[in-house]
Length: 221
Image (cartoon, rainbow, N blue to C red; front, side, top):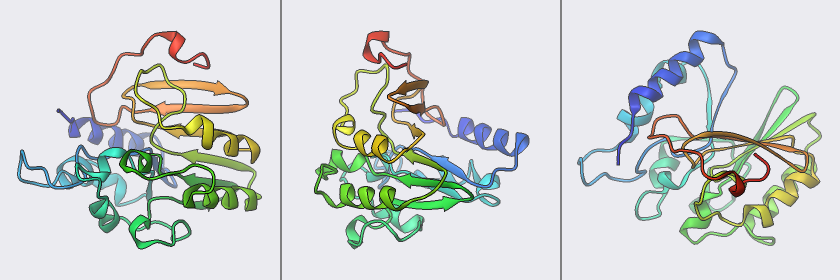
């Protein structure tokens, strides 16, 4: 599987060249493998993420919503948790620490959700820890703008097997006035509007791009 860290570097350089961002949001899959890469006998974190973006990251805080690749082949996000430290207002369990969290900037509230948790046997159904956290977090926020970031898009012109985001999480986002959602996972750019929320898929940071699938796969595109 190929990754393109030079494209990651170009994206980071373009951001710095055209604006002075207060923060950067990333929808996950920042590396191909979150754990040890047996094929190359090295970690991918330096060559694929930190080095290509070093000029940007030296100036700007980056907030990540974990993707399935950060979990690694074994389903263990330990490297991700070691390399990053995010607001400690999400999970109270050390095993899932930093995997979901929220923060405010100016008049905006951001919720960073772990949709990849579902792929490794976790759960975000009603009653689960992450669901109850999101419910409490969104209901308590009085911010003018509310944004959600998570890895798997609930709407996309792609045939990938979706976690039950539309069933479990989207109703909470609608109920508490989230205006826009940013996702990755599918390697293309797509915008959708479903029941008052804008959904932006931006999965072209440093991996091979996919072709958009049949329009019938996403009536909101």
